[in-house]
Length: 159
Ligand SMILES: Nc1ccn([C@@H]2O[C@H](COP(=O)(O)O)[C@@H](O)[C@H]2O)c(=O)n1
Ligand SMILES: C[C@@]1(CO)OP(=O)(O)OP(=O)(O)OC[C@H]1O
Image (cartoon, rainbow, N blue to C red; front, side):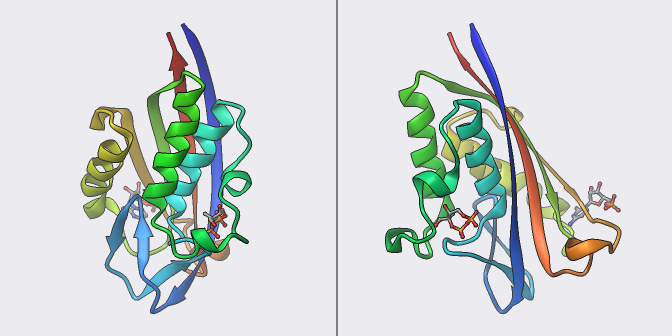
């Protein structure tokens, strides 16, 4: 068995009145993440971790933020395209562990829906998807509610 690991990190600015997409679902909040796509930071770090694990560069390399076809795109589509890239290399997803750094709102109530959504897109058991959240205790850009960041670690394997 060939086992590989990858990690991802991403940041998006938060702005009032923008929709807040996270892990494929919409979060009810006054502010939302801003980006060229739907700015779903959690999906972006999963894509980057998967691409890194397969040594396939990164999300911006495959889906440029200068390319009009990705303007406002649902990041679930980018995740599906990323999965095609790693599956073309013969890899399957083992497990994914993530942390979202966000001062507000509390994400715990949304985590079951996020896990269900991601497991559905990836085509894996919910038990393979972990989503955690932390504030940064009011410190830094996350603490000032100026942005949201996330981290992902993934394991992929080839039999
Ligand atoms: N946006 C967030 C941030 C945190 N949580 C949950 O609260 C716990 C305590 O957070 P601290 O930053 O004070 O350590 C954390 O472990 C999460 O369970 C959350 O749901 N949403
Ligand atoms: C997702 C892409 C797609 O245009 O754009 P953004 O939403 O700006 O996200 P980011 O993580 O900053 O860059 C990666 C791009 O591939």
